[in-house]
Image (cartoon, rainbow, N blue to C red; front, side, top):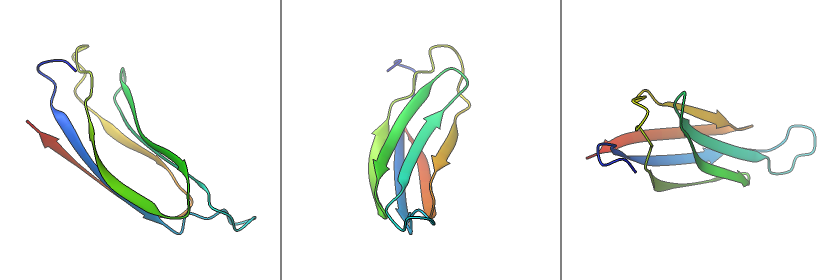
Amino acid sequence: MNANSPALKVTYSYSGNVDNITGTASNFILNINSSSDRNSVANTIASSGGTTTMVYPDTSSGDTAYYVEVQAAGHWSVTVTEVS
């Protein structure tokens, strides 16, 4: 982690994450990315779940604009809070 980089507190949950064809649990993927930094937060196969975790982005390239990327078959919620 870059000394000037903030930590990000990421809280997520998901439900109804089921494949429409097979009826089985589907893949849930959550990433926090910038154009030069990728941070995998979750990559699991489950119909529901969630937790709170910390992400330490690498902003050494000067890129500080991050976005949330989610792949899920069901409903999901993500909250990202900067922690100094």
